[in-house]
Amino acid sequence: MRLRFTKMHGAGNDFVVIDATREPFSLTREQMRRLGDRRFGVGCDQILVIEPGSDAGADFRYRIFNNTGDEVEHCGNGARCFVRFVVDAALTDKREIRVDTMNRRLLLKLQDDGRVTVDMGAPVFEHAALPFDASGLKPRLVNGFELWPLDELQGAEVAVLSMGNPHAVQRVDDVETAPVLTQGPLIERHARFAKRVNAGFMQVLARDRIALRVYERDAGETLACGTGACAAVVAGIRAGWLDGAVEVQTRGGLLKIEWAGGQSPVLMTGPATKVFDGEIAL
Ligand SMILES: N[C@@H](CCC[C@H](N)C(=O)O)C(=O)O
Image (cartoon, rainbow, N blue to C red; front, top):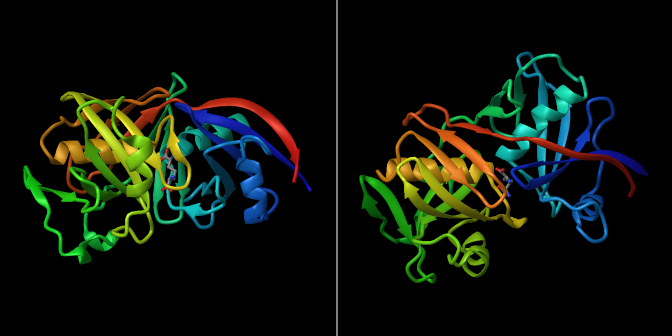
């Protein structure tokens, strides 16, 4: 089969975007792996699939697959690229779009400067959301917020939360020398996380600025992770290190994250860029 696609990125987190609004999406896991392979295919961190809205109120449905072909719940940078894509392809004339993901409804706004703001929904802290609490370990309370030790990983102490997808975020002194590539894969597959986890390493630069690297579930270290940026800022606010509006410096660009606490939604603003259109035989 021949597949038409669009290559996009959001702060360097790169995607193959597939328009499945007219024809049902039918790629096999093997085809998605080939598509995501940087040497034998197009190459990307995630594959984004855009489908028609499934019920009243949602303009579209948006599905996310890691480059391994595993379907996941959420992708923040991808959500921004989704908006850019549907507007540029004239699939909608709206600038405020409601979209359903696997477990959330998102509200996305295309700004006049071309950036996109995503209402990412509220963070979830209950351990039921992440299978972490059966370990017998005790968390350290910082400002009333739980930081959990990871037993085999000396010194690593993570905030565990979900932005729809699971995150374990730790504070480090220097993000450039943080053990992202050595400890990241160990955290990703740590026994405490039955569904595995995205591992974030955040350096607090000021109360309104952090530097962040994320070792993503399946994809490895990416140049930016939108849900990871939200999780890091929420953890930093809960721990008392950060204020409610924070610039997140990733290796691929800048994201702005805002959170008023509690059940209020996390807002993420950042770029969404088309790279090229293409067609591939799969
Ligand atoms: N790059 C993403 C997150 C993609 C999914 C993640 N790897 C997972 O498995 O949960 C983002 O921008 O949020």
